[in-house]
Image (cartoon, rainbow, N blue to C red; front, side):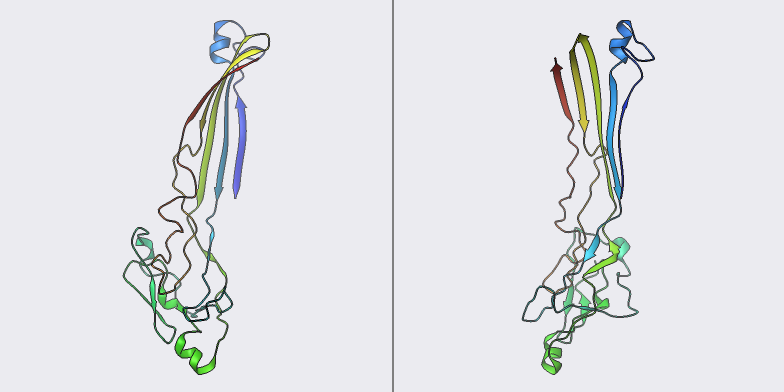
Length: 212
């Protein structure tokens, strides 16, 4: 994560290097520009680690990842999060895609606690981690700007005009990826709470304040 925060005042106006007197000092002086800019990598994917078969747990019975099998689908670069996606699981714990729109490769996952396997040898732990650090959501990019104009009237009286521009470039930042390959889940690989974003839309706010 990289965060840059700053406030810059133009060197003009009363008591400054440039335009310190006259009408120009009122017009050109008193301007400030501030910002908070934040840039960070995406969030890792949290795997929903409970199996499809009873008893449902809070993650004690994890899925497994098959060695040598790509974790992402071959067409993940053309994945459309607006369409339904997911995997189907058979009685032996193998996963197959529900359609052609997939981000994750369903074949990379295996349920060691499927109904058929439980009947043979009981419950076991899967080898899948709780978090996939190598599969992340989109980068988080955010810029919040403010423009301030302070006009001194007389003595300690001033008129302050401020423009706040949060999310100045109106970026759309979506949540972390859905990490549940369960058969009932039709949003596997989709950003959580899609199409809602985790950042606010750009809303410009104007403020005029008389300070004395």
